[in-house]
Image 1 (cartoon, rainbow, N blue to C red):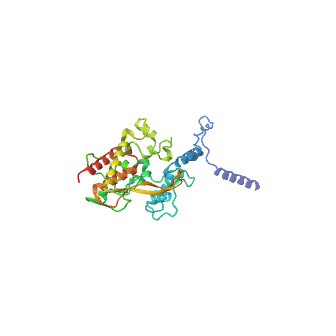
Image 2 (image 1 turned 90 degrees about the horizontal axis):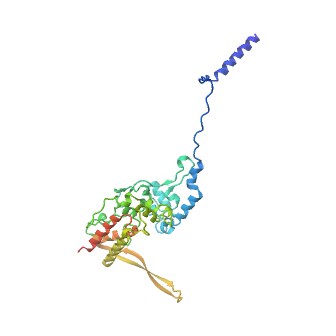
Image 3 (image 1 turned 60 degrees about the vertical axis):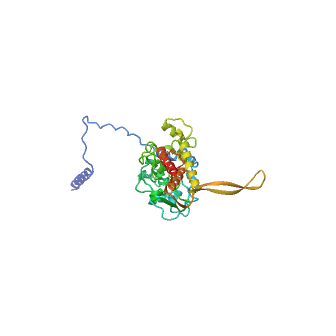
Length: 363
């Protein structure tokens, strides 16, 4: 009986162990196991991804370039308008981030600060692979403030164009008629309308001997860009994160070896035309020059003397012929563009030529 039970137990155990093991595979044709496969291609060292930004040289170079930029200046960024809800989207880091995130700035900024890396870039907050990249906060084509129906695509310069544009429509568009009333010494398109000039839209296109090109067709809109000229490889205090225009980039694109940006005398011609418009408006009383009187120490005599300096030009509130106000709008806008025609030579030439013709026409 014991022998029978032992045999029965052994059979059950054998069945149990066999049931835990899968079926044996068939041997190869030669009855031998196959060879091990070769190792796969090694992956990229994870540190390389981090070092794209976090290498000492890269970060330090960008910081040093950024310190040379007026974008880093608290005076430019926040002192005057950084706290105002209506201005903060472009005059403080906090305001720009709120605008980029929500599409508007709802309240005044209590403690505005100047721009920094995270103003324009989204910096990763986790170490997930999808969160590594530092990307621009705003990259889509813009709707111009002066006319939201005008959509412009500046490519990788769209972030710049969100701020570098005019705030008001030209006089005859804003208030059609034969006359226009200027109600403030701050009237004008607003400083920094570079994207309008580059795109070729927004200034007062007065009828005259020159026709206006189709908006968006300017050479520097189709073959160059804000970043292409202002963020070219850094050198001589230009390009990179200084955002100073890089002469080397211009010479490379134009196949030239100029020593300044006055290609073909364009800047010289534009400055002369702007001065002529300004002087005409001064004579007509549309524009006045502000004067600052300061007491300064004369080192030779040891006495304080008056020093009279100009604090710039401003419009004089009043009602004027429409062409005069349009001329003022074009003059101050192109002065504030600061490229003296470089951003869009053909558009600027048409604007200034037709403006001067309108000013000289018999009244």
